[in-house]
Picture 1 (cartoon, each protein chain N blue to C red):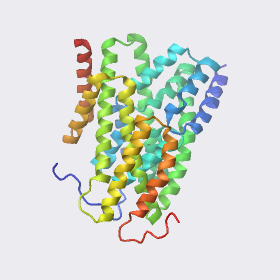
Picture 2: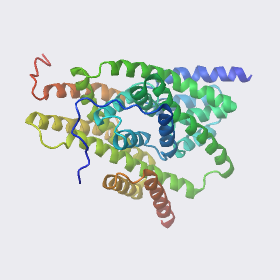
Picture 3: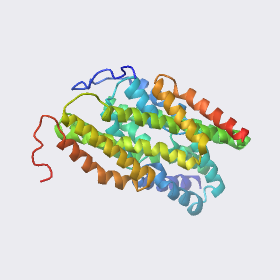
Picture 4: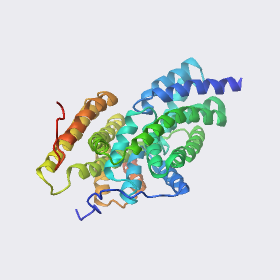
Length: 212
Length: 178
């Protein structure tokens, strides 16, 4: 529980400029390490927690966007992060990093699979890795959520905003995770509500005539 | 002919790229339909094997696309299928990201980001939950997930690969013991 947040939201986030090769290698590395799923959890750890290249909120919004657009979620997220950090070249470096070496690796695995087939021991280990990856994902969700819900202090508007964020998190989990409603439909229905709640709970600003 | 096959791969995967709203798994069933039944690039059994491999290997599960291309037409097939599936949707997302970032700093942009953030967090929890449920992991799986989550929160700098390795080993041992 020791202090882990570095700064309470600097107004304008700095524009870091990682090298293109650095981006490619980082995405390759997390693509090659993420056994059992949870690539986006690795991205959060690498780019938000360890390097601080993206603020929490921006990463989370990019993640929501990446999931409702066509295309593989993690590839979309890589494109958005790469674009943000280094423009078009960054988007290419990020997506290529995530796909090229892991793509070669997966074909190698497929070749090996034909030789050895799957032993029960191996498939049990893979199930265990998937369960562990689910744990990584849940830990990432807790970290991201703590940033939105758990910030200390603030005015009553802040408290209202935190409460709204917690309610939205719980609702999305319930609808998509437990009741298995269609993810995109759920997001498209809840996003306007969530954004309206942000407007209504804006501190030190007149909410105005939102909602008419 | 091989060139026909490459063209067919592109013609299958480009449209799938653009309709895969919600992610790769949303079009896996249609991929199977096209690859196995329409074009006969691989058998149902082979498709199931490739799906299992895409889950087991590191990296995005959507590399299943690369494996289908490889099975259908070797390395060139893998390249064509990958480009056909990843490039169109990525161009679209790139365009959206560009426009999106151009408005950074305006009040409504900030509000939209702050509104989307809790939705993403809910989806993250739903994603972790979905893995546990689809794996049919039992108490051992839930226990490992809880343990890994606790370790990661307690020691953020611990490398996740260590946790994945320990989780895999513990689960495998638990399976043998029972």
